[in-house]
Length: 324
Length: 244
Image 1: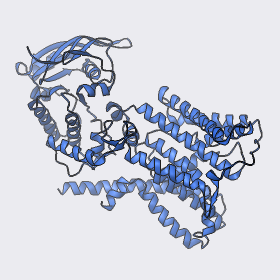
Image 2 (image 1 turned 180 degrees about the horizontal axis):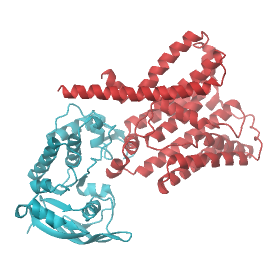
Image 3 (image 1 turned 180 degrees about the vertical axis):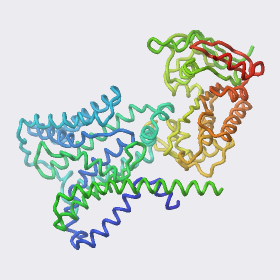
Image 4 (image 1 turned 60 degrees about the vertical axis):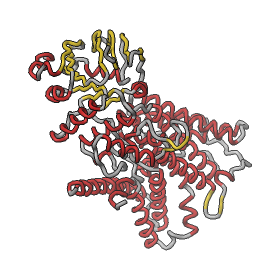
């Protein structure tokens, strides 16, 4: 395959290029960047951001949007911690937390698909509602995080990494395969790429979107649990603003707001890039307030590169056809 | 007796208080190319949307190959062998030709529908053969559909319908938005379909195109059938008079 075709067919290509450039640049800027100890720090929050970004990406491919992930990121672990406090076993409490995430997803899907409101508005509503419930459920102050839980299988340390990285890898690989190699994955792309066509060809697009809403919310809930386990505390306001970070990672990773384009790898690279930027700002002792500026600039650059490469590849393809 | 492929009896469709289709009776023999003409809102789109499973009739019956059928969804229509080619071609531009040919009916290596592993090799080779069968020569089935011209897209849409052994093809304004050279290609496809004995329902605003390729012309006005004539017994001027 030629280079221009790779750029066109792989939405994450520009993010991958940026990752390579940033890694080189940051290594040059700070000798502490590419070191064992530093990566231990950088990789800590990656599974949490990346899992949410993967969910958001898949939902965006199907043509919808979820702003409520930051609130579900707090609501799910909150329900779980309260259940644990009431004496429920860990796995059951986690499932209950995930049920809360799925409930939010079903509300998002119902408002979007049955009432026909844009998912942006529907999930903006549930962003506030889910956050409110998380705080009210806590009764005004953070609930105690139970001691003596066996959490090794979720956040235990394995040398440089935490076990949560393997959860990310397993979930990411699985969903990547479903997207690219399964008929359902094809339906997700078709639904977001041209909903009318997908429907006319017999795909139940409402069902496809609902499943994507559920997947997105569940991943956000699970990611919130991972963070709760990692920091061993339940803060009702955790994840505030996280929806924007996740959407930023998805967009930097090549997901298109119009639907039908995106990849799991892109979401993970997007999450890595954001974590790298945060890290280099700390390493270089730059005022931390520049972090948002850098992420914002990266979103614009990534989308601009995507557009330019697609336009350019499109033009070179046409020239080639004309020469036939 | 002629072999009636599809017939409808007393077909009615109400959209709220709008009577979009009024008591339509129509028999279509196998292998005939029928042109549907009529102004906007005449009922021709409503009629084909009922046949392709997008909408359901309020009253009346549809008989396919002599048996009464209930077409509840596009899948039901496709399972009967009724394929619809839409003006907008029903393609996903970002997806490859192969994926587009098999949208919703993917070839699977294993696993149930909805959770099956795609057989990409089979889809690529069968898609390429299908488009070659309609006389369209493209280098690879992996080309994204957005790289094709409007006429080529219609070719792929017809190839898709033929691959799934359609016995009846509904072409809804297939020549709209096409360049002149491309229109000729699409009309050629319709002639090919007739040669293969496929029943075709051809809808177009362009009466010249309808007159050129059809055996029979059915005119609609305000939800009712107002004329049903052999194409060779009429001309474009008379057709204009029929629908206005």
